[in-house]
Length: 171
Image 1 (cartoon, rainbow, N blue to C red):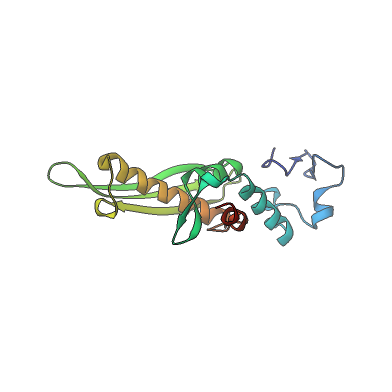
Image 2 (image 1 turned 30 degrees about the vertical axis):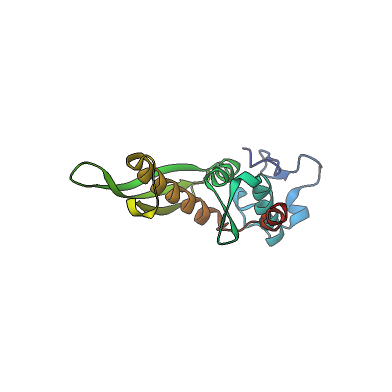
């Protein structure tokens, strides 16, 4: 079984080995990662979050009211890093009398390999902003919001971003 990059390989005896050393990870950190069946130390959890956030680039952020927020591309990279899968659990798309999309809601479940999951809800409506192709863009935006929320909740990252201060310095 393999964990995310930088956290080595778990051998058949269940001991986690760092690729760069022969010292067992739990001896260094005090505990193995929760994906291996135990709770991580605070230091290991922060290290794991920081490693995931380090894969993000400036283009993975957008500025809202002067603060950087992770965009869809960033959440997809984080999802890939943690090997998450998504499943649409529910969707509701409302149309007007001319079959134009007015509003959409999605519930998406994010899964980790170990079976842990979280559901995220997202919605979007026509009056939010100018959409070039609203019949596509409204449901797509609602689905993206639901996926992002499910990922944030599952990983406990939220808008956590170690690179934010670095990002602000680059602007």
